[in-house]
Every structure is written in C-alpha cells, then in structure tokens.
Length: 472
Ligand SMILES: [Zn+2]
Image (cartoon, rainbow, N blue to C red):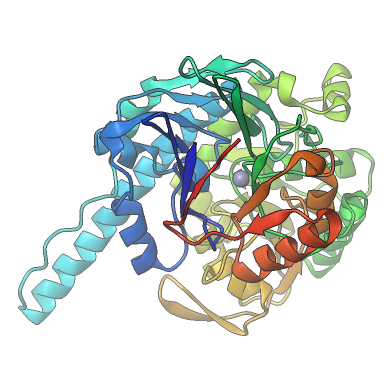
C-alpha cells in the first residue's frame, strides 16, 4: 500500500490523499482548497491525479474542503463510486449543487466586471473565465455516491476493504479504517477525517478505533487547547444579552452545515429557559434550509441529549422565533430591520455568500457584534476579524471595524491537542507511523512533538507530493 499526500498537506483546506493498492488507485476525500484566490484556483483546477484511473473515492464527510472538488474529478474523467455514510450522501446533494451555483455565479461576476473594464479602457478583451465546474458537472457527480453505513465493512477488492466509524465532527462524519490482507500480510490504515470532540451539541463523541499500524490524523488545533464546551451556553448567553442591551445586531458567520444547526439548538434552549430575550433569529442561507431538512431525516446520527429533546416533542431546528431565509430579496430586507436580532449566515470563513453583505452593513456600527464560531483559515476575512484588524476589505472596499468581535471557540468541531492525544491512546501501542495533515505547520509540528513525547511513535508532517510505502 502506498499513500501520497496532495491536499491539506501543510495546510487546512483541500483534503486529497491518494492510495495505491495492488495497482488500483483510490482517493481519500477530494476537497476544495480555500484561501488566497490565485493559489486556490490553480490547486482546484489542476488535479494532481489522473481522474480516469481512480477506482473509487472514500469520502470522510460532507464539508466542502473535503467533498467540494468531486465535480472537477468527474469532469476530468472519474466514473467510479464515491463511498460515504447515508447522511453525508444526503448533505452532499445539497452542498455540491450549492457549490456549483456559487462557481457559476462567481465566473459570471468576474466576466461581467472584465467586460465592463474592457469597454471603459477600450482595451483588449480578456478571455472569459470558466467556472471551476457547473451545475451539470455536480449533477453528473451525485449518482456516483453510494451509501456505506457506520460499522459495516465494505469490500473494495478481494484484498482491500474499509469500514467507517463516527468521527463526531458533524452529521454523518466518519473516520475510516482500510484493511489490506494478502498471503498473511496485513496492513491497517486509519484516516481520522476531521475529528470532533465530546460534548458538542447534536453530534456524538468520536468513536475510539480498533488497532492499526498507520494513522493519517488531522491537526487543525494540534497546538491548542480549547476552552471546555461546557461553558459555551453561558458565553453565548452573555454575548446575546450584551448586544441586546446596546440595541445591536448579532451577525454570525457560520458554515451552513453543522455550526448553524448547533447554534440554532443552543439559542432555542437559552430562549426557552428565559436566559436570553426572545429576539428574532434569522438563518439567512438557502443552503441551510436544505441542509436542516437533511438533519431532520438523520436522527440516527444525533447524540442522546438531542434525541431526548426530540422525544419531548421539541423541534430544535425550527422553533417559533426562527426564520429561514431562502430568497435574496428577503435577505436584503434585514438591512432595514431595527435590532436587536440574530443573523446566522454563510460562508463560515466570510469568504463568499450573503454574510459579506451583512458584514459590510454592520461592521461599522459599535452596537453590533460579530460572533465567530469556527476555524478561520489564513488569509480569510474571518481570520482578519478574529485578529482584530481595525480595517478590512469587503467586496474590495475598505470597512472600519467598530462592532464587537467575539469568538466562541468552545463550539469548535475539531478536537484540540489534548483531545487528539486522548483519542489516539488506544491506537498508540500498535502504531508504526502517524501522518499529520489538515493543519497549518505550527499546529502540526506542535502535535507531532506531543505525540512523540506521549507515545514515542514516529510522526511525519508530509508536504504535497510526498509518498510513503506502508509495509506490514
Ligand atoms: Zn470538516
């Protein structure tokens, strides 16, 4: 078995790992790179693998940085199956269509602007920009998905099978174990996907894995310790009450999938218990509407607390003060509405989508709060806000930041250093090597040092293109 790391090697986004087994080739994830536009364009358009020769894709979860470039793979000639859990398959249906729509709209916008500039300067017309992929490409991708439930071994060839476990990161998220056996030779490789944490709203804690020799482990927060998720409701309550007292608005950039549903659930509980005033809450994202419907269908993925809540007849994703907004015209009306209210909108790293309009309209008013709830990659607008930059650019225009910027790290869907170390404890005695991916270098290096110190295991932090032979 040979593994080659291409995406999310030395960075967080664009997960793409290549496996070669007995001459057959597989991919673990095929995600979109995000961040500085020029770099990500190049990475997303030029797949480092020959799409037509990939036998299958094993997908860990539906987040776009893991699934979002599958239509490019299909467009480039891939025709094999994409294996994923049932909830992941349903989520990808909504998310890949949404991504295709964004790609088409972005290309349209860039071309219109280029045309306009060309006319103004009477200059040469630039070649029109093609979208990364189209809705048609996304729609050719969706039938390739095949459901594989948790804890159900799936045979890929006579010698190779895989099995998935709950990674506790988002609805349907999985950690995978690949099992190769031939003439008494056995190689077992685990891929953590994105690893969640205990005590998060909605999701279950990550499953412990059975023994393996090799582990590909995410390291988003490999050098950090989160504050306990137990304090999250108190902190959310304080932010809401503080902003309400100022008569301001609470703008929450959140991934349409996962964080949005967690926040809605927490706000529901806080309002029910009278800890926050009953102010209107808007979930402003067409994708969140579709995705929330998928959540309602996959109760099997919920933790015991959320199930109990449902059993008591509560609808944690659609309570009375909550409004889902699908149409852009409705979204624009929020500008004229007086506070206080909450708007949850994508994208989570403030890179695209309706959140940009809300930020442009609200960042300059000191009564408002921007509540950051998830990981913000380098070079993103979200990261600049977290780093408390006084001036940022939204749609290319300078905006002065006067609103309160609050971070709710407690809701992070990624395990921190001590949680990663704890999770790999049962695996440690049998491990020959750990590969750290999905982390900025300082995070991966800090985790590598911690793993060596705790377990004395060999750890590698591969760069793009690095290959390793996995021997029994
Ligand atoms: Zn993820």
